[in-house]
Amino acid sequence: MLRRAIPEALKKGQPGTPEFRDCLAHRAGKPEGLTRVDGIVNMTSSDHNGFDDRTRVMVQIVDGKWKLLND
Image 1 (cartoon, rainbow, N blue to C red):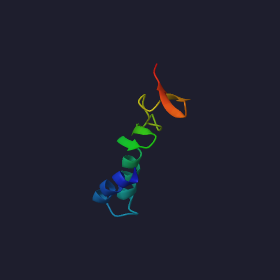
Image 2: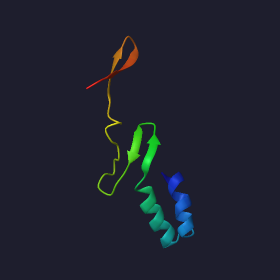
Image 3: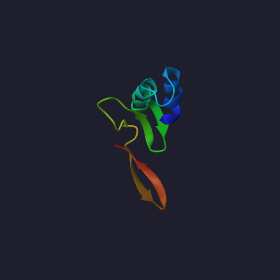
Image 4: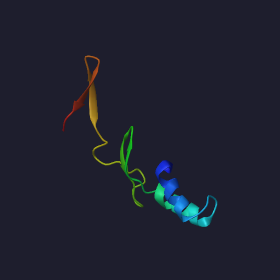
């Protein structure tokens, strides 16, 4: 999240300035479409987890292999 937020914050001000910190906090706290190893994140001011239904899956191990279970 910081890799995306820092370049934007640098456009607003130098590190340590209120402008930089405000932009960094705003941008880092609201990633959209950020792909992580555990899912895609779309955070909002009311959803700090940010994971949607694509992230929640149920699996079963069958013959030593992962098997995706469908609804």
